Image (cartoon, rainbow, N blue to C red):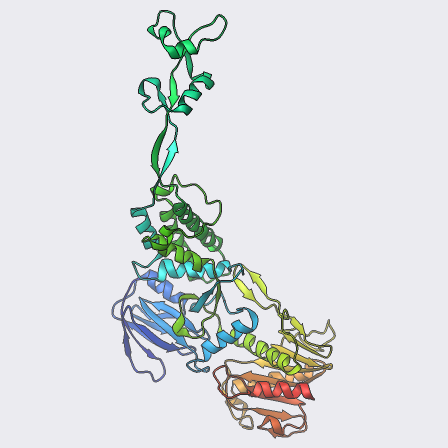
Length: 527
């Protein structure tokens, strides 16, 4: 993408601010921003911006909105940090960290226009190809000129390592200069290189011809060609074999996703750019004679100290690392594509409830969560069910249908279902929720997300068999619960019977412990 400057402001009540290439600016997810460019961007730039949510209005202006996506994006050389409007300044980092800690990194989506940071971890876990693709995208396309992978490969091409290799070229006997014991032995063993010496030739009196007299009738022979000892410089070194291997591995990852319809369209475009850069590096003349790498080498002094090689060795180590999350965004060393934070919030709610159950029951969490691994990353399957004890189980996104006999109407899929002794408690994660007083009985025309979501909790409680209570879980601060007998409770401790619907706050950025979600789940387990 070309580099250009622009002015931006929130569509509703924002103050215009300027942004220039090389700067980092912060904007909010789910907020529409007006972008006004100093001159009309190229069509290719408009196309790339459209991939991340830009909607052009005129040739020099448009609207940009990231919806629920958070992380990092790029416009005209400007880095956009897309922040959460609900989780607070540290909420995203905490959310990512806890999800990673609780279930081995279920955070990487492949359709998002943004990115977020991740760190390499030296474990035996097999790298995810899509994570490697994102790493290559960063070091090939995002890094500054001079620090890109292709820049380091170019430095190697300008001064590749060489070493002497022994060889034994065949030369005409008249050109032989460096005969050794091996050369003499071959004269007497490689008869195909000998010619019959004519009787009138002066070579008939040569001692070698006399020694090579054989056949019927006996005839004297003399070598036409002989091998001689020699040495030459070769680029076929362990360091260059390693470089060639890294390039080939990188190309294999890029080609795996080149036309993959499961990834974001802009990523497919970037794959073609990466493939071009890597193919140019692979066609370097010094690599033509380099043989395949038979096994990964230990780092040599060249790999550790020489310009180009040391940087490529470092990139290789990170390329082969399993990727986890940072403890804070300041520690970002690379970028992985972001995910819809609403979906991430669903994962987090499920995992936090599971953690509370394990702590309350003193159960063993090891091996409890199974994840689905593919080229694109790791995810939790719909319908994943974790049996904690004979009486307690927790399910993620289970299906309730008439055919299965667990619902009597249309199919329903609540986010999280806690079952205790046959009784079900539903938790539906609503990151997008806007808080409104639960006791507000204004008309339907003034209804909010909260009112609509509470209606759905009534649907769950009514349509799914054996449901005692259904809760909206949202990143806020206020608790509210309607008991079936008509009593409204603003505090968990005042609820006499969890038989009804309500809303419960759960915010990864909250410092108050224990959280309302933890208190509620613990209380349900003690009933």
